Length: 398
Image (cartoon, rainbow, N blue to C red; front, side):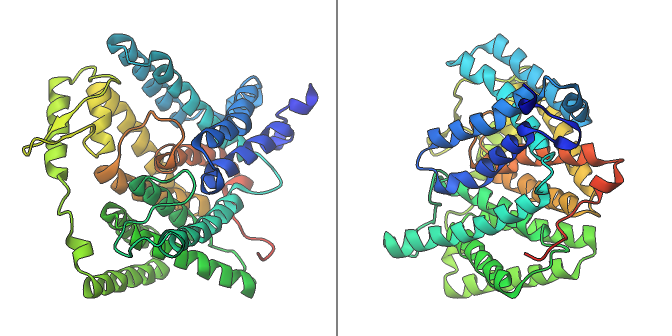
């Protein structure tokens, strides 16, 4: 069946199918009526092509990167913890490391599609995300008629407020750094303006302060990494925006206090101390606060990983995560490396205050957990290949 091949240079049907799957992954949640359909499309267009491509030697060679070895070690430890502790749904929990591995392979496979560069797809996804963020704002406040003080969520299947803010912030960050070297027609510049306004309206109205802090941290880091005046301008705009919010409705900045975060983090640390070797596994655990309320996670991805997988699992994940950040830093001279570094910083800060866990079916948080690792794998495969490593989105005007 030569039509199902993965040939040299990414020729064949499999990279094209995976590319379509990546489009679904990045954009499909906005328009999909149900999470089930969103997952089914990812299965058909990303996981199945990636699985078939793994039977070809050329593709397997592309995956021989340090990120893959570290992820393999982490996945192996997850299965070990699952065998030790069991789970309410052992099959469902046990298959997630394999499905996430297929997702990472699917991103690498999609990047081999020769017709449209990955950078261009990330740019398109960023523009589309900004427009749909604006549509979400109009639908929530104008069509439905929710009060302006209400916290905005997204249309489609990304309907959890904090997770939707993570995904929207991730698309905004990637879109900004994919604009480098892009020559724009005036009409497209207007389109980008509407996308930018959509992002600004959505992220402000979602009132997710962890995302605001993450965006600010991203701008500061990228300004230092790139020695960029443009990042400095964005920082100035952000400061002005915060000042306007404080002047109009300072309660937005002060409401909910610190939302129990210090107490939740302390509870997470205590659970890690009590179960430091293999964690508590995948069954539900509770953190009880001083007021008697309980929470199912410490609102910190890194602490949750340590609670569930113990110190060894946390160390393995941190090694993988730091490797991804270093890859972005080392490749910051190319647009995809800049996008990865910015996404990694945004994700790292966001996950400190609102991360709920790693081993779930595809959701909005995958854009700040597994997508950075997949992009790092793409960059790893390009290193040493001058033509690919310097790939960017320059070319015909948009």
